Length: 457
Image 1 (cartoon, helix red, strand yellow):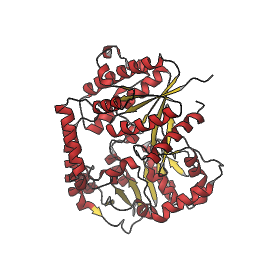
Image 2: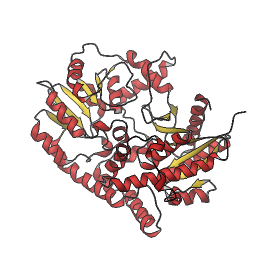
Image 3: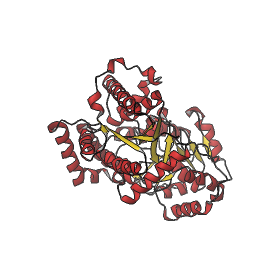
Image 4: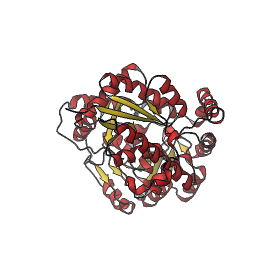
């Protein structure tokens, strides 16, 4: 007899907990057991009032923190992991983040061990990320021998990857799978309409810095956060309020200063395109930490670009203004072959004109394949094994790989890359994170059940 499968949903914010509450109820109707661990005390109260079983990890802080040893969780270098929060929150206090990480490890360990005593098969489900609550959940799952499922957006709109027990991108290789016509039609639609895939959870970020500052909804959220932290004394993960506000003000200032460098055209020269990543994103800090400093990569590209070539960059539209105006001024003073496009320009227009695309692990690399362009990948990405990308294992190899890529005369056609994208489709599932519409919650819940079945649960 197969033991009941029980799910521990881990959430860091109220929008996450509300979504997982709805998904959890659907999963319970399907016969699964459900518990919640929530790193937002306001959401803990809400979940409890709604009849959910929920654990507040902050209540477990300090119980056995002194006994936490990173080696017990197979963490070989905690310092590298802590750099995600240091970069995301712009903090320098390593000791404080280390203590927080240990508190989370001790709390999760105590909570999960208590749940395991009930029997049955348990697993953790959470959004992919590099914040210490997510890391602690992952490493506690590993220590206690249960599965951790990470959720992240797929390449295709309205689909997700569900990856088990790894921080690495899904391993996808081209297959001989059938049903190619649906995927072909989807890709052709992407090219025809120049569609940029934006997950529902991230759409509010795809705005200018000024619009974010003047958004009345953001003012209400700020007021609620101040009340929660300083009046109700509720703890949560995302509580660096002053830093968050100052960062957005600085982004607005940077966007104004950097706008003098913005160009609406790529220029007459052939160019190498480097689409900038979201700074301090998990894809950099955890999956490819050696490439976190993107300014150094831009500088190197400008130095190795062949004579007559320019290097074109474009800020990620979700965080326009995140680039330091000081660092950009230095780069433009040093290189006359650097072009910076306005972040509002459609990415497909740039990809179509580029000679070659260099990326760490951005989805732009996959989009470039649709345009038949040579793609050079520096970091860990889901299209590593595509067969039509050039993988660089060390920055010192980039020059030789770049020259080979520029010398390619045969470019992949849609038929050549279709089997790979079919595999991407087949290995992802329908659903969107944090879209609480009944249709999406139902679809997401079915996908979670399907991923369990596909893995032998």
